[in-house]
Image 1: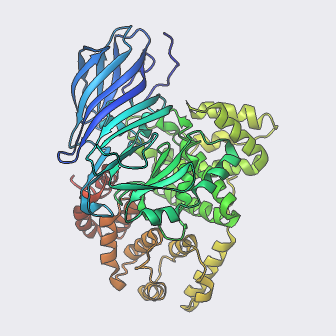
Image 2: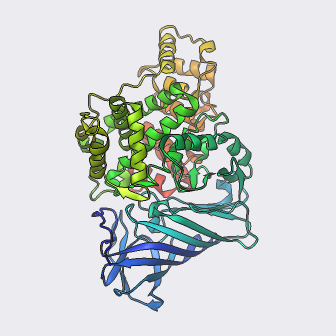
Image 3: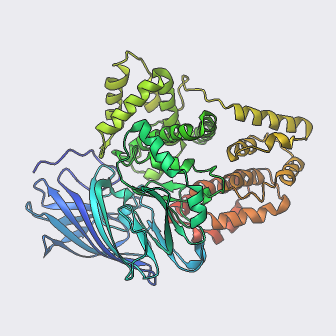
Amino acid sequence: MTLKTYEEELHSFAQPNKAVITHLDLNIDVNFDTHIISGTATYNIANNGASEIILDSKYLDIEAITADGKKTTFTLGSFDENLGQPLAISIKETTQKIAIKYRTTAKTEALQWLNAQQTADKTNPFLFTQGQAILTRTWIPIQDSPQIRITYNATVKVPKNLMAVMSAQNPQEKTADGMYHFKMAQPIPAYLIALAIGDIEYKAISSRTGVYAEKSMIDKVQAEFSDMEKMVVAAENLYGAYSWEQFDVIVLPPSFPFGGMENPRLTFATPTVIAGDKSLTSLVAHELAHSWSGNLVTNATWNDFWLNEGFTVYFEIRIMEALYGKERANMLALIGRQDLDEELESLKETPNDTKLKLDLKGRSPDDGMNSIAYDKGYLFLRTLEEKVGREKMDAFLKSYFKKNAFSTTNTEDFITYLNTNLLEKNSITFNTDEWIYQPGVPSNAAIIQSNAFSTVEKTLQSFVDTNGIDTNITKQWTPQEWVHFIRNFQEDIKIEQLQQLDDTFNFTGSTNSYISMVWYEQSILNNYHGNQVDSKISEFLNTVGRRWYVTTLFKAFKRADRLNEALLIYKKARPNYHAVTANTIDGLLGFGV
């Protein structure tokens, strides 16, 4: 049998050119008392005459394996801190199925088991998975490479008072017996296989969109995300039909390590975006955009991560512009540009890490999950759009998504497609290679402007000059304008000025998590201790597990030479964090070293 050709993979032991999985039947029991998932992963495989098939496994107990129903031998290779172990299974050339009986362990990194007190309702425990980039192998033995796409079915047994949902066709009500059956008919990479279990409810927004959340949150979540159907329509108008039938969002407990995760059919989201005014819902637009860039067309390796995220930020901002206007979109883009400048500064000692195309050999793929992939990737596409014109850009992207649907691509293939179908076709010269293969940002980068932010900057300068501020000007400001205001304080801002601003606008007591994060960062850096901000910062870090927010604040403590304070807070907060967040902060603070 001739298999498709797969690229060399730095972050998986699989050898798919010899033997590859094509479909998963997962049958598992989820035990909240022991914090163990146990069961069987059965795979259909395609074989190119190999005598073994290699899967990825990390922190799993492999109990027994069969090939076409008969017991077979297997070996677990030496352990790698990033990759785990190769699971080599003996097969025959005629083998069509392998079945792996296994159990998770206490070290499994993808799973976070939460007790009732760590949830919104505080009445029942909760479990969720986080597979990106290479953590699915810690809860399912699998070929954990983004270029290997499979369909899957799952049967999941959970306690009767809880509901299970996955990145698949989902229930909208609890079952009587705690048994749930799932089907994902479209082929997806392993990192998009996701599971969440809790005392959750469902509320529809439209016939193909809706939300899951705990009971105390469900009405707020439905109201916050009420524009979801409009977002799907706006996205389809840009780049073609939505290919996954259903687009739902589940709001998880606050320890979820990301803003959102684009699991097909069911985006996982942080509760930090529930602001009460839809002001942070660009996150939903971002995860929706992944339904095209990332889920439909996937980066072949993690060195090509910018193909997932740069395209998604570009698409997200186009969706936001279509729904809320160009000014809102430009504010978001300009904040991203500022994030990019900060990232470039932080990486000035390692300039190769500021290239779009990365070389992550011997490193964790998480090292490439930063503003370079997101915001430099976006800036490349926005600059390209300004060069070729929006009409041509949209036609090109629509054809790109259509041609590569349900497959993977790499940077080099994208460049070839770009040259053939956009640049050469329209006799346009563009410095593509400089953008992708060179450090930093090229000089022809698009200049992003925002009239609203210009007003914010003038208001801030007036405050610096006069110690006074016209609250009539700030009355209608969006959270993005407040974020811009706070982030641009002068370096020598006085404690008295911070106190005055806090007394006037109650930043320390803000209910908007984004405003809180940037205000707490400034408070730490400038040694501001007014209005009990220190206890608020500690409370924030103990209740919010979103890695971006948490990392920002712990970095601020480190920059301000307040490491002892940071460690005191972290020792208490760490048990509330998912492994993704904890691993990052361990490295940042030298915790446990």
